[in-house]
Image (tube, rainbow, N blue to C red; front, side, top):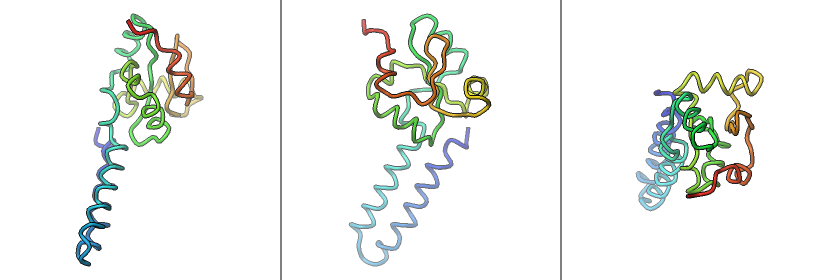
Length: 145
């Protein structure tokens, strides 16, 4: 669980170090801008930007009942972040499984990708699709009711 926070914490610490130079040099605006930039990057790489993750078993169960795709992802993955951001509000209509928190989810991804933990892997109707186009994923969503 702590490994998902390593990159965001490192970015926050790096931002503090990077902002120290301009702050000590008498440029508080540059220091604040640097710190804000690093905080933004830390937020984007943290698990906070993604919908609350489910276990692989719970995601499969929910997908079977409502027909929504299951997305297997991990924090810090730029392709997962791209998918999440391009889906916008529709991301909350998918079932998200963090493979770093759920070993069963990681096993599903390895089985679908020849032993590799390549994410995002989207499962639609029991068929895995690795790093699909966000527009295609949006098309797989059932109509809103």
